[in-house]
Every structure is written in structure tokens, then in C-alpha cells.
Image 1 (cartoon, rainbow, N blue to C red):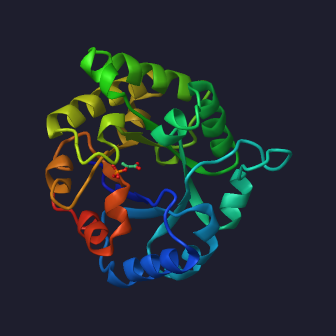
Image 2: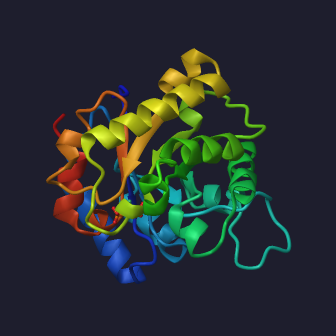
Length: 252
Ligand code: PEP
């Protein structure tokens, strides 16, 4: 576990302005002491400004759910790193499985987004993970290596904190079927080995690798007791104040 665990809530396409603001305000009010944890929420882009105001003065940070690679230009429907920074975001998700599998984002496009985010001062939360068919055919580690090497092509990290890698097995996202601690630890240790080939060993040791896929208050403690798990990326359970607060206050 890293000295500062990374706990992020991905709100996906949920929440009107009023709902997102109420959720953010309730989280900020209930958060309490968060030593050793960095807490981030990724609301829909439409609610980023309002959520930013609702969490102002609290330790909760903001992330975009995706990011373009140019500062500005003819990219209809996209949001630039500069726009996200303007709204107070420090992070942006890239390569989320819903982007890859519903919207057809390729490893090359994910690499473009990731390098663009870094170039323009945003920290990518780089999501990777195998499908059920890939796991069942024994291809998990090969898929993770391919996604890592392609996504990190030409990436030079200013510091280990500038990158978070999220291991999110596709079969575990939104399904209620969580990876076992052993499956998660095996994947995270493998990811760390690849990062050590790609960057200096000292840097790789400090890049936070977080797990995502049906994380709940019931399973977070045993997942985060694993040595190579440095936090969690939470979808469904981050939309309920009590569950997300319990996850933030995990006991590992
Ligand atoms: C996610 O969206 O990144 C995610 C992990 O979702 P869930 O927690 O709902 O599985």
C-alpha cells in the first residue's frame, strides 16, 4: 500500500446538477479525517463546476471522466486538459473500459489522451483490464502488458505521482462480481513489474496501482490489505454517500 492511498469515485453518466451537488456536499460534510488517503470524484462534465464549489475547502479533489489531447480546436464533443484544469481538475480518467468497449477507443487513442493529459498538466488515471473471455482463455497478463506498453508509449513521467494505473477487469465492472484478493494482487504485482521495465525501478515502485470493479464497503478492506493495491476506483458504490464514505475509511 502506498503511503497515500488513492480513492476515486467515478459517477459515470449519473446526476443532474442538483443531485450531483447534493452528493458532493454530503460527502464533504461527512468526510472527517482522511490522513493517508487522497479522495477524488469524477462527476459528469456538466456537474464539474458545481461539484467543485460544493467540495471547495474539503480535501476532495476533482477528475474528468475522459480528456482530449489538445488545448483547444475542432474536436466536437471533447473536453481539453486546459478546460478540465480550469474547472479545478487535477486528474482525468483515460482508457476506462466503457470508453474502450462501448465507444471503441483503441490503445493508440488512449495513449494519445494519456500523453496529452500529462503534457498539459493533468494526471491520468490510466485504466486497463481484461474481458471475461480473455481471462478464461488465459490471456489476462498478455492483455495487461499490451495495454500498458501501448498506453504508455513515449511517456516520460515527471514524478511517480503524475500517473495512477487502475486495474479494472471488465467482467468485474458494474457486475457485482469482484476480483478475489488473489486475482487482484497477481494482476497488480504483474503491472508493477511491467512498470519497472518501462520506467526506473524507483519510480515504478511509487506509481499508485488501484483496483476497480464492484468495490463495496464489504470487500474494500480485504482488497486493500494486499501489498500491491494502492487504492480503489469505485463506480456504483461511489454514488451512495454512506458506502463511499465507508470505502474511503477502509481499514487494511
Ligand atoms: C468503474 O466504473 O470504474 C467501476 C469500477 O464501476 P463499479 O464499481 O460499479 O464496478
